[in-house]
Image (cartoon, rainbow, N blue to C red; front, side, top):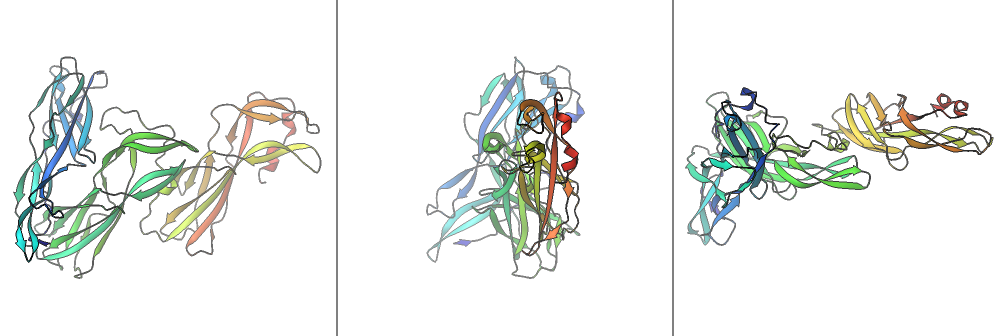
Length: 488
């Protein structure tokens, strides 16, 4: 196929404007309002004919996925005489659909709904050339103006028809060189309880904000791409000059809502959470590239998106579950990582066990199974859990040789009483079940980091002991010397 123009996206310095006052300009608190109205709809836009299809006359309407939706309400709608506006915000999902809940009153309110302005390419079929279809690709600016929504009473309001963007052509000339930019997007997820990982993010929209002549008369453009099944994207952008180059101002992956995020609330058990992967800017930018060698592609790196549970677009939300953690080891990303540090830990519980040599009961240790632990590495904390053997192992990336690290582990204390088998007489098998809790006593043994035989991999082993404190000290409790076995 023969395209007559580059695929270019342009971003003006002000594609959308938020009118009126912001929430900070008013002291009005809406938290006491108990009535709400849910506004929902579906947003689409026309991209012209599908250049990959054999039907050259059929124009394609696509869902406007990952676009911001703003609902603005004057505070005076809630309390007469109040000044300022409240702006609620959400994003369309991958189907272009949105739903947002805002406070209202029994007689209803008036709200203004605005949609994010964006740019995209529009294809027009122009005919056949050498038995191949020829298309004209134009850059268009997509925007829409909607009338106020009146009479929004408690309940729900849904747009009866799709909301479709209008578009206008943007004219741009003067670029004769080109360079290919590529990258990758990954989504954070949980593979097990307290185990984080990343997976490819397919069909995600990535926008690169490019500035030409940043030190002279800067021109700002935004180029868009969509990730494939592996989370990879690639796009070719025009240049005025390889020598002068350009600056990558920022790279953003548009966020999206997710209704069924799998969260492991305990070992072997999971629940589904609602929330969103929020729009995220890649680290390492702005970045200026000059004196570019023609023909060499540019890898702009990998971007990572993390899930925010119960995200509610500015309104009060349910908050994160008690079992949620933002700091799972598998989510750690270190730029230019060439080494790794494997931390092998163990947590033990104080118990009474029989010495086979003397037949006496004495202080001893057993494995702390499924015990939550917080591991601190050079001041950065990670949440993990011990396995059936009371142990845990995870690996962290490192940009330098991890020869020296300050490492500690703090196992979680019992919040409620548990059972403990107590032998009041160390020389008989008499036993009783008492109640109490296990507590950590700040005794983790920090070991030396050791380099393994497998390249740039380093290891460290560390353990922590937890003592039992009975609710009421039973007879014979003082016969056991727990501190004497602390180093075992």
